[in-house]
Image 1 (cartoon, rainbow over the protein chains, first blue to last red):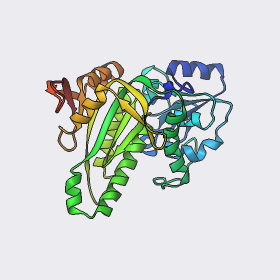
Image 2 (cartoon, rainbow over the protein chains, first blue to last red):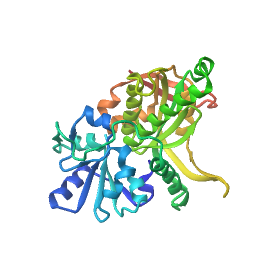
Image 3 (cartoon, rainbow over the protein chains, first blue to last red):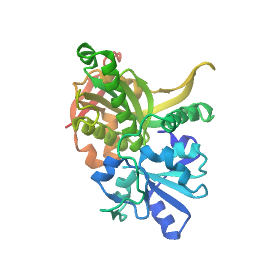
Image 4 (cartoon, rainbow over the protein chains, first blue to last red):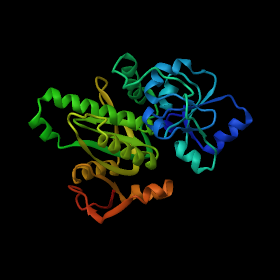
Amino acid sequence: MVTSATSETQRISPKAVDAALRRGDRLVVLDVRRREAWTTDPTHVPGAIWLPLEEVPQRSRDLPTDAHLIVYCS
Amino acid sequence: MARWLAGQGFPRVSIVEGGLAGWRKAGLPVERLDGELPVASDATGPVALGEGRASFLSSLADRYLVGGGLPTRRRLATLFVDIAGSTRLLAQHPPERVLAVVQRFLRLVTEVALAYCGDVKDFEGDGALLYFESTAEAAQAALAIRSALAAGSCDQQTPITARMSLTVGDVVLGVVGSTMRQAVALVGPSVSVGARLLKQIPPGGIIASGEAVEALRAEAPELAAQWRLLDPAHEVLGGEGITVATYAIS
């Protein structure tokens, strides 16, 4: 995946996400694990929204456009 | 996935390093949810190939072509995957049946790649070339594909096994073709080695180069420990004397 080559996306450390959440930054944490992965491991980052990868294209319109989106997978 | 969201106009999208496993590794707390999920979903099965899905897949390629960021040199993990014994399948079943198997297989492979923060570079026949920024995520994707196939989630009527090769190294991505037909090429020694290693492993096998396992030791030692050394100086088929250490996962 070459996300960080495009400048619109970047990698962020878990500690940085935790700090941003504690500061109350406007961000949305998205858990995009597939349904099978969630079933195997029903834990998640506190406050994360589960948006299964296969549903992102259909549901992305529901996401706020002015927030920092933080995505994680397995 | 993050890149796709960025392509949809979300101004700031980031990927958590290491995913949920990285979160735990950093010693941060997780919540357990035993009941309803935070976002309910109506979908109960695979998403049919419809307009939304087609748009999703094509937009990734479009972004490569129009993004203006190519060529670019990156350190990437590559995972070649293909169906073992596809010639036998063709001998035993009509082509339409084999196509259906390949379609289900490549859908599974694609969804696993994306779920592990990777991407599909190419589909070729009954296989695919996947690539990842994280070697650990690539290895996890390989294991997830193997588990899914073993569970029969691809095709219960026609069980199949896959072969996979995992390598990592510096690669260059750039546009090839003409204005009439364009694609993004991914070029680097590790890609070439991965393609050749794939042809040298038995059905169901997952092979990795020594460099990939070294990367795993740094990223995910517990995952690296699952690999056993096959050959400290494996001569790459057709590689004109190139040798790499090879590992297999049990």
